[in-house]
Length: 285
Ligand SMILES: [Zn+2]
Image (tube, rainbow, N blue to C red; front, side, top):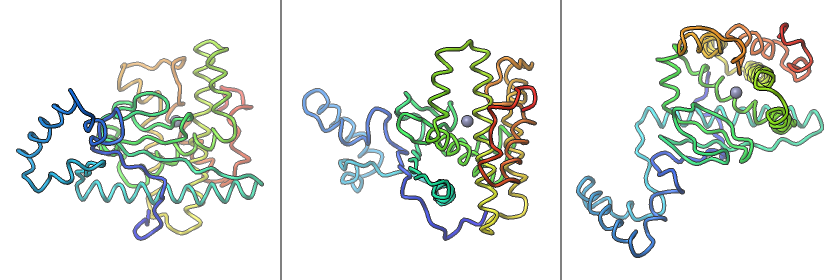
């Protein structure tokens, strides 16, 4: 994707290098008493490592993000993709006579708190309906490339677009329904509903890709990268990888084939109308 020099979203919140309990290492440590003693110890420890030049930064409310050039590049990419999703969904909602409320995107490393509990890198990227934010640890992209063997920038864009798809579903009321389903149905039924929700998010990622394509910023191979990612994170593929066998009742996201199909459907149609994953019989998804 041609992302260099394009608008970056202002809705990205960079929490990398911060503790999980609150924003930044500065604020909680500047309380008196017991914590004050810890502050001195920590400042001394940091001085040993960083030299005296670091003291001003150490005592500030924001700890500086230790970020490699590669990570900064990734951050730029993520911020551009998020901005592109904003343009797409603002336009689509406006056309439908509605208003799009832009989601936040939290970049973190290790763990952080979200409106849906603690976020950790192990969980992978997710969207939290309670605070309307996407949570993303940049290390996931390395995992996507190496562990899931889905390289390429548009594989990453697909993941972000899928999570933003959940935000769109939150605005259209699907996430509320899912919550209700969880409380009123059996686990198997709920899992099936979850598959429908996830496939629709893939569809919405496809719609996003279609808009980007019309803007002329897709590159050769981008769609294939997204399709490869969709395939590699299919439930059947993942179950095989983790459990060594496939158990369809435990599917929550859909098979590789499902996920590719619905992404492609969204990409080909480029509108919301053909994205109803809820009225089709489950077997025909
Ligand atoms: Zn999802």
